[in-house]
Length: 147
Length: 294
Image (cartoon, helix red, strand yellow):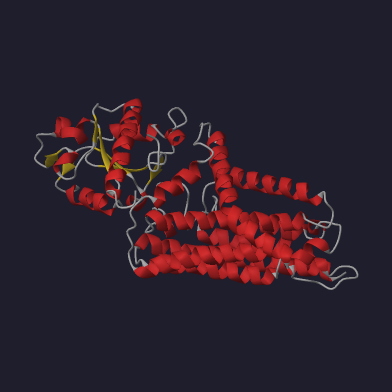
């Protein structure tokens, strides 16, 4: 399965209204213990270079537009990975007046990684799952035009 | 003539592979220095293959033109160098190529790209005097003894059986210093860093997507092979043993750059400019001045 895009997934990490618990776990993936660069994963800060949008925390009324813009700036094929229970459905903040809900309320989400906070192992597992989706999307993008 | 054609063809065909491999070794070395396992050796090739398979979002058509001009002129620079022609010409074409990257970033009108472009010009201002002095240094060094000085690269190699670095130790140190800027290594990676989460995102390459980014990556591979070739030019002479020695010195210089990259934080542009010019003046200019007296 490891072809074309799956061997070099570049991440864009966006912190929605997260409590920072999941963010720290995402950053922990980069440390020597977990070292996601083994899989060619790079944490890029640039949506234009990114293949996977990793969002932690729920969507609120203020960051809705930001998330939509980040998603629209990413070139195809792209996948969205919601990390942590807040990004999946709003979590403990679900009932708050400013929270719209999970990431899937504004952009399509391909992989859900639950947990509070999501453990690095789970995040890496989610990203690896996202790679399969990414490859699938690339094939559909070509749509039999070239291949 | 035939020799230089072979040099040009070999460079144009194999430099991307060698450059990509060097880049892979760089990432592996960096990871090991940080106590990580690191990506596979061929990771830069996977990255470029991925980028080619991505959608290209162009800001404007000029971006397309300038990115292509950049890769063509960088390849042209290296081709002239490995073809063994005039080193001054090589230096001037290199500057032209660098300007195309600056133009590409400026046309996008993105604040991060434009900031990267401004900083890239600061970097050019820092390294350009030393690059020119390197060319002049070779001219002066080849002028020692019975010969006239020459800018011709094949004559620089064949004119004597003593490596040029013996006459040009100061120029060599100066060139190694600006090599850090040219290879975009910390502490001088101020216009575009390989590492994430910079204050200016990805600097000069922020607005490049998919295949366009792949082009820039490939031109950096071309550029790195050319820059290491210039290191080798300090060592190469008419004796056979200079070839393995040059390879060893190139590897050592590259290792040194990776080590510096991993052990230093980036500096502000003014410190880069000042230090690069001081090194240029102290090591480069004084070295050439002393040679002139003979």
